[in-house]
Amino acid sequence: MDWLPIDLNTLWFLLVGVLFAGYAILDGFDLGVGVLHLFSRTDEERRVNLNAIGPVWDGNEVWLVTGGGALFAAFPEVYATVFSGFYLAFFALLAGLIFRAVAIDFRSKLKYRWWRQAWDISFSCASILCSFIIGVAMGNIARGVPLDADYEYAGTLWTLLNPYALWMGVTTVALFAMHGAIYLHLKTAGDYHQKVRGWIQPAMIAFILCYALFTLATLLYVPHITDALRDQPTYFVLVVLVILAIANIPRAIYHDQGWLAFLSSVVAMALLMGLFGIGMYPYLIYSIPETANSLDIYNGASSTKTLGIMGIIAAIGVPLVLGYTAIIYWIFRGKVRLDEMSY
Image 1 (cartoon, one colour):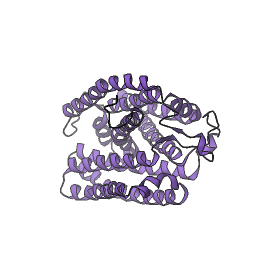
Image 2 (spheres, one colour; image 1 turned 180 degrees about the vertical axis):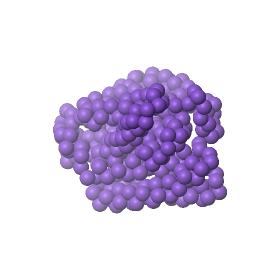
Image 3 (cartoon, one colour; image 1 turned 30 degrees about the horizontal axis):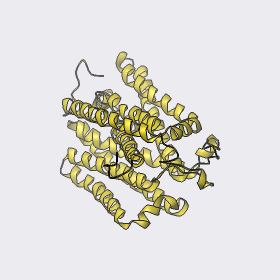
Image 4 (cartoon, helix red, strand yellow; image 1 turned 120 degrees about the vertical axis):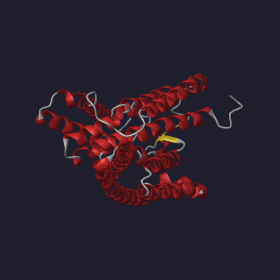
């Protein structure tokens, strides 16, 4: 592997980051649709919501499974620490994902109003819960968590529920809501299309306000996450590109270019995940207050031989996942049209 321009540990850091970023982008919009679901008042509107994500939501979650598998193979020490220390949080995330899936499949089995409303509430609440937990987990990874000398989590559940991580959870819910509103705008038509259009600006404003406060909190209380930006000012270009991508969303919506607005949202989320990765590198779990106990891409990694073998497998598997995703989105492109086979 001497021909690689970067070492295998860095390569796997990038690959795991890409997989989790792909999950955030793809499952982010269908979680966002769930966050907004109860704002749709009629049964037909809610059926449109479910059918907008129906063909793709389970495929989107493949990225989470793949990312978890890659983390286990490449950085087993990190996997063990995270999944044991964050056990209750991840169990709640799993429960939320299960309830979302059940709600999508069961809602239209019966036509009783109470039945459908119950599953609508389940779908929306589970989507909000999942979005929030994902944000809280990322907030704790960025802020740092207490690890002992054996790299085991030394805190409690309440340690994870700190103000910084909780606000990251709120910001993530707002981001996914914006992303989901843009996706619904792309997939809907008629009066509902205009109604969804009216959701985008409030969702954008909510996200921008949340993210501005989160950025200020990061600068004040989590300075290590911005060290890379201070050391390499060229990374600030990514910040400018994020601003331009978000600013392009209302312009694209005004010209009814739903695909361009959604693409801008995707680019903004990808860049935000990139900034997160730059801020974390080379750490995977930052330990506070004992920084020496942190897990990075070297002390938390598998052997070089394992990383090399897994790299060959990834070179085969990742294109297959990308190809599968592209085919599914191409097949189910266009506006949602309800029929007797719809949810």
